[in-house]
Each structure stands twice: as structure tokens, then as C-alpha cells.
Image 1 (tube, rainbow over the protein chains, first blue to last red):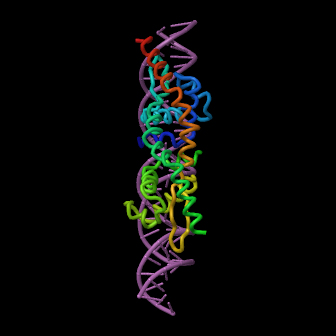
Image 2: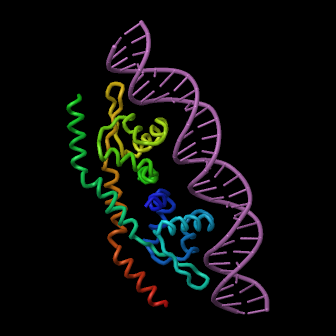
Image 3: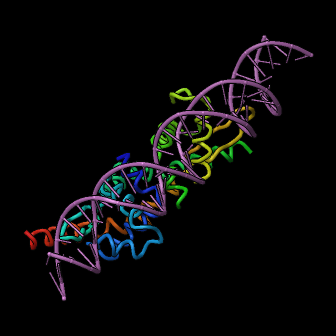
Length: 103
Length: 103
DNA sequence: TTAATATGCAACCATTTGGTTGCATGTCAA
DNA sequence: TTGACATGCAACCAAATGGTTGCATATTAA
């Protein structure tokens, strides 16, 4: 899970996920065309996304297709974020009460 | 939003959020007691969490209380993660179809 | 008032990160 | 088969990151 959070931390990598979300299965070169940096830099970002299991690749001849894997993101949403979300209103009202008590 | 993602990327900072989730309003020293690093390091992490608006502080005499603010996490869950989650099954079945077509 | 406590600020350091350039390899098409 | 195209690998570099130590400041309590 750590790898997923770290992968999501970089705006370039989030943009790559956005690009794949817009059109799945894009080749490395296709993704590079939309990024203002060298192909090698994009390759590194994609490797990090792949390591975090956020992107799956499929070698097709001399091309490499990239597919978005939304499962880890979903897991984060459910396992980690959900736990804060659940108590959201409680925490807010608690904070409000504390602040008012202290004026 | 970038600040929130970057803040969440570090495991120490996620642990700090967990600690605050377990007991809200903890002082800096209380949080330090649970972290295996110097107070100054913890201070830096808390500053990053505060900058991302994930933690709100309240000066109380010579102490500083820290409160969890779950709103930004909730926004991420709704605005960014939701968009992938929504198409989760679609994307998976699409990937499956492509893979099968290519055997 | 003075000592202990709680926090703030700044310089410094090692490692990681995000990017580059240069070259190698593998595959398609003429 | 040969040239063009798509990707892989490695060395290198600047900047950001995560941590440290040392000292300063502010508040509480004896």
C-alpha cells in the first residue's frame, strides 16, 4: 500500500493515470506525446506505477500497451480513507465544540 | 490537492494521522512519544500535514494541540478516486476481453 | 525569580527523486 | 537484409526529502 501512496504522490504520474483513464491501452510513445519530458522519464514514472500495481502492461510486438488497474486505488478508498470519512462529521463537530468551549 | 497527495505519501505522516484518529487533539510531545525519531522531525511532518490542511492546530498555553481534519481526504476520495472507482468493473472486463482476444 | 517544560528556528547532511543524455536491443516493413 | 521505429538500460546530475544537532523562546510551577 505504501507503494500506491508514493506512486500517487507525483502529479506527473497522476496525469498518466488520467491519460490512461481517458484512453486505456496506450503505448509508451502515445503517452510520451502528451507529456512534456523525455521518453525515459516517462518510462521511469510508468515503472513506478507498474510496481504499485496501478498499471498493467502488455507487450504487443515492438509496442508496449499500458492498462489502468483501478483495484489498488479502490482498496485505498475502502480500507484507509473510509476509516477517516466515517468519522468525518463526528470529528468536525467535536472540533467545533472544543473551539467554542475555549473562546 | 497536490499537497494532500504528497502529505499522504509518507508512512510516518500516515501514522501521525492514525494517532490523531485514535485520539484527537494530542500535543506535539504526546505525538512524539509514539514516534521513533526526534521531536524536530515530527514537527516537520506535522507542518507538512498542516500545510495540506489535513491537521489543524490550536495553541493552548505552552502546548500545541493537533486535530485531524478529514475534509481533504474526503475530497480526494470523492473527486479523484471516485472517478476511477466508478469505471472499475468496466475497465477490468475490458482488460479481460482484450487479453482473451489476443491469446 | 528561577528551573523545568513545550515548542520554534536554522544549519547541516545523506539519500531519494525526477530528470537528463547516450547507447543498446528488438521488431516491423520495404 | 536493411533502415526505421519502439522500447530498454545505465550513468549522471540537480533538487527535494527526511532526518539530525544546537540553540532560542515562551510558559508553567515551585
